[in-house]
Length: 534
Image: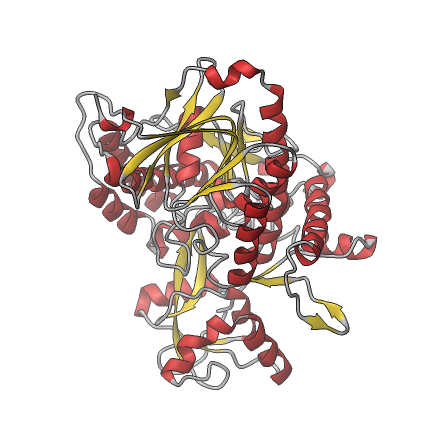
């Protein structure tokens, strides 16, 4: 008997939330407030791991003023290729407004006072997540830290009925029998070293796909953040106030934070050096930046560099679906997926509904995290309540494939092999960012071969299993990403193709993608807007 069938710790819960970032904690809080017994699983320590906990972030927050709301929704629609759903945008703005007010009133988050009012368009991640952890514990949520999930469990009808995983600090496996599961595992940044993102390896999407769920928007997943070459801090918004230079000090024409990042990528490919100076911020804006994101300036201070007056080298770090918009496809207002009993929230879920084809950046992602977490927690609790008492006696079946239940007769591929292919086929700018079918197809072929190796023999147990499953999740992510990118033969939002530089009105649709051994794509009609907007 393989060791993953030995379960030293056997737990039950109405709702299991996998992931302890903003989306996971809001999901856990809402499910608990709905009366559910909730268990939250975090691969790290809930409240400290993930991109939000590592720094500050803006929040897509507006008052319930019609003109202000319209401006917030219309501001990025063209950039997003008009793939957003206006009804969902309004729902998220409403929920974000409510949640930010609750954060102030019930979690006592200390928003700074600006012009006599609490400023709620941003949060400091460490303080925000510290308070979320305390809040969900007060609500009765149980937390299992350092306990990565490794697969979903389903019943005989395919309804999700639990989770299996591993407790790192105890060296033992665990199983949770649950009535509903929320995946809030974050996006996938492919171990690029972007600050806080190396825990974002796309695990939840792999689990969901193994249970039969679909993805959407995966072609919009090639986000690269600008970072000083000597740090991992990607705070791209600040570079909207920057000028970029060649290594000889002459201006790099066309380079910019928005609409000019491809120029930076090409220069990095050509010479390996791009210099930057944040020289267009006023003294007042400089002060706001220092107050808003103090950790951005720490490495500059240590090196004696003033980013407002000195030039410094920059690079681009892959942020994948952490800052892109692709993820698990949502089929209902409660963030349900195509699999009964399974819900998705935060970066694990597609953000096309509010961002369309282009990243909304940290502000939209943070609003989406708290809102989708709220929707998913409420939906999962309702689903759990709808099941009868016999639900806890369902026979559980593990659906994990790669690394757990390999096919016979294949070539075993290990974690290091997979990570090497990810570095060579997914990280490079000329494959993933400056996309061309002539480079995407060979890269996809390499990834397909690695996947076949995973399915054909790679297996791990105990503490080695989470790492192997993370590698499998990244390979799966990349294959959905490139397959969707090849299916979109135009340039829309972040999905730009060198050989198809124009937007094609006939491709005003979303692309669903799914499968693991055989990847498929399917166009999906855009919801929640007038067709004339295309």
